[in-house]
Image 1 (cartoon, rainbow, N blue to C red):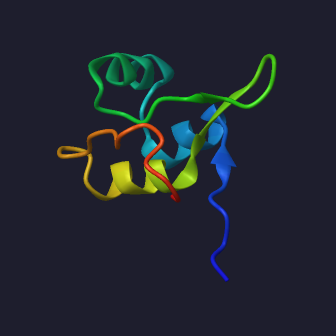
Image 2: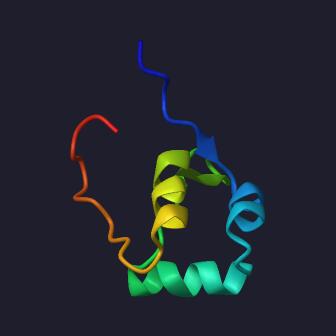
Length: 71
């Protein structure tokens, strides 16, 4: 059985990527970094698989189409 994709918070993303908070948000605006998704009223996170793909090849990462099916 396939393991579900985890949601990671910004603190984890900062530690894994080595980027600053402002750089992450600038890259999101440029479309070159995985955008956050709302997980609660005041909380956001990112799919861990998206972060792993970005870490593997940041220069060519592009967002997948929205609602593309199973992750």
